[in-house]
Length: 146
Image 1 (cartoon, rainbow, N blue to C red):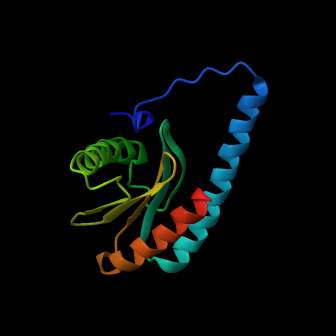
Image 2: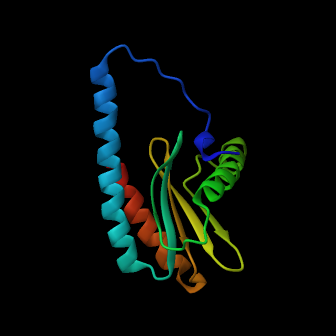
């Protein structure tokens, strides 16, 4: 599934070019906050492979430290997982999905909600730092969401 389909795509028709300009300013602001968050994440978490900011229409911005990774594939596959986890959380009455942690043999992926409809995803190799990474990602997502 392509990363452009993180969640159901919403089609918005706008009649004013100023609305599109406003969206562009908001997008630039989110990307600037993302870049600042990446700097802070690098200080707190070692062995980072990639950091992605994903919205309803796909990857908004990313930083790739491991060229062996295919971010489009990761984003697409992880989007499916997040949709299932979000549905399970909501359908079971547990509430909205806030965070998802996936641990594999070679890396860890943590996705944290950035309201209203984005996810900040961190991929790293150090399983010993899961707690620290969760904390740093929580702070970063909060800063981006402000």
